[in-house]
Length: 358
Image (spheres, rainbow, N blue to C red):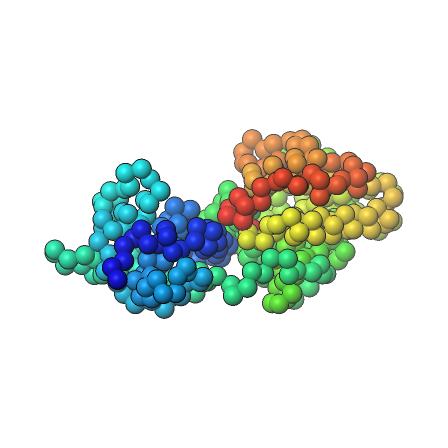
């Protein structure tokens, strides 16, 4: 039976295509050294992968339920690739633009192309193992747990690097520094780090850090946030710009949520509410230790997080003119009164699962 690129749209469910696209983008953006793809490139790669699968298996196993990385090489002309890539466009796309996309994939070592004059291109896919969808959808299978520096620091450091999008060239350096910072924070205030841990792998997929602020450091929240970034100073072994309050300090008024992050692909109402509950519990315990506590500050390192913070009731109090960073503030009592289930009931989490801000 003759097969065409249009069969991909017929036999490869759009929802499953989107799951693959989201997963590939998550892998692309979350791991240093991985193949970097744009949303359009990921979408086209998934369709090319689906075409290879249908070419090999026919429509007997259709609709497609899962792709396999082990697919035979196949012939695909540039005009066929255009029909495949630009199926939703009126009039489709050009063979030339499809050829450029194929060359882009080849430059990223995702495909190998062989061509001869007068014959369609022969393509062999080189799909990386991380691009495979997990066998089961893991969303929801997480539990709150204490931070374990010997087990969790390296994993979380890798997840957090993309928050520092303003200096992508230093991503790997940041990862090393974050590892050190997390361990240092744990030594200074062990109760200030909590994680959400995947049940099956035991690996952390979300983290919150919250610390009591020494009275002399309170003025930092009126200055540009970049002046308080510790990662810029740790290599010089400089002191942390924001000092922690000591137990028993009666003049500690500020709690600082220094990090609040969920791994892309895991943002969902259930996971977000779990991490918010952990945050509330941490601040309640901190309030018992520091009875004068009344203000909560956090730092918005990535522009996407600002929408989330504002939805929860935080005020953006100071934006840094040098970088896309802001201080966000909420009164402690207001934070305790939040009903996040209601506030977030129509919040769109999907951009957070597709964006690079682990």
